[in-house]
Image (cartoon, rainbow, N blue to C red):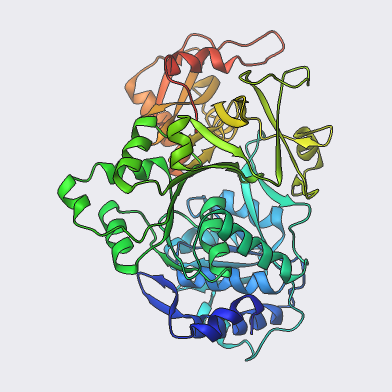
Length: 512
């Protein structure tokens, strides 16, 4: 059987492995389905390093596919289900995906995007796609041969506006399965997830953090309970019903939980919780303090990214002693704060953050050596974040990547939106940036310089927002548009975006 699942299928065969709205799969059933699925994937002629794309919501089949790919050396591309057909088509081509697995909720997008993808399998009724259960049933019984590690490829947008696939130098496809076992067990220990623990997934599994807190934990024997979307009271009910030990949330979800009335919050027994993790978006200190007051010292924060994984962690106790910190560097990570000239910044002095892993691991962008080179210097790499270290080595973030917007835990890159809006006939110049939002941390705003003959109006604002929605996923569309006489650019064309953006943040520091 699939090696990583063997201990749990033998020790706890009838206990739940994965649970969603539609039902429960036990460890015995999960192992058998993953074995057969691995064989079916091999039957397509897929070999180590080949790619498949997963275009689905949070459901048990998604975890079967990830587990099967993990055991036979495949790259599995985690697709953002909000993407338009054009965005999905680009990623399928860029990643070289030979098979697309898509669920019926996204059938229209999948059918339009995957015309050139060799194999198409539908979870549910997807016209023109082979049914998933039929595909799985065609696989052989028994353990897949030649098991080696598969690894996800997660796409994150870059300055060009097109998504970029992120890869790691050492943790990659074809490595021995012992590597994945070490990653899974080490992550569970690092993230304080107890043996036999149960993870609750209420965010999209295509997000790198949600993948880590669910699939990787599953590979370490921690069962997963999932929902397609987040509902605050249902989340409390699930924690009580399934005795959830750990959950990853974003600050938007914190806010929604805290908005439940006191009677509702007291109704549920949350004593099983061992670790409530958050990151990926700005969190108000007031919101965090209220969560700690409610749940106790089980609230943990991390700092990382799709490229750099988890670099720091901080407990409730440490955070209360140093409000605003995201913790100290983990043993395998070096954090260097550098001035613009490359010299080390002093304690308390803000600078750009650069990283190095003691293992020799590194990051690269799939098929883009120039982009890879742009984030490296002298053996270090950067995500573009800015912050400082205090005298004791605790990291404080004072900004994110200068242009990136983080709304509800999702990274949004303005260049992609600007590239769409500039094609509207009314737009002469455009800048997109994030402004404060009480619930989501940031929301998308566009500043537009109009062509001659056009006048600012509410109707034009609505038209520009609708125009962007026709090409981009809805969450990327501006929530509002400001009309300016001229955007501040240098003679060489460089845009001083901070001149436009900073007034919205006066008195409010952007930090995770």
